[in-house]
Image 1 (cartoon, rainbow, N blue to C red):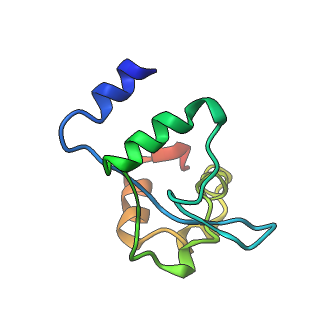
Image 2 (cartoon, rainbow, N blue to C red; image 1 turned 90 degrees about the horizontal axis):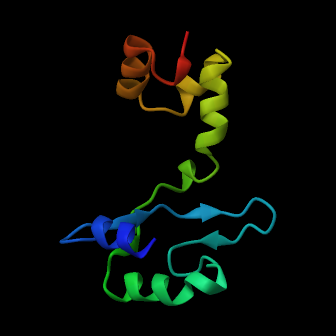
Length: 103
């Protein structure tokens, strides 16, 4: 794991974390507030301290209830509702190239 992370974060690589609103508590979860498994806390703290992991600051509140696994299920199930939550340019690419098993 350490070798993989070392390769991933070599140089100026950053991981930007989009905030998440917990549907049960309504609490906003960010890179700063997320819970990390006890055995990974020191590693996570090191990556945060060196600014390799950061929270997206200028996020759109409207996007918080959109979950990728739900959108994927809609795409794969041919439910047209997915097109309302995916940018038009991306909808076009998914349809054109048949991504995510879109039919």
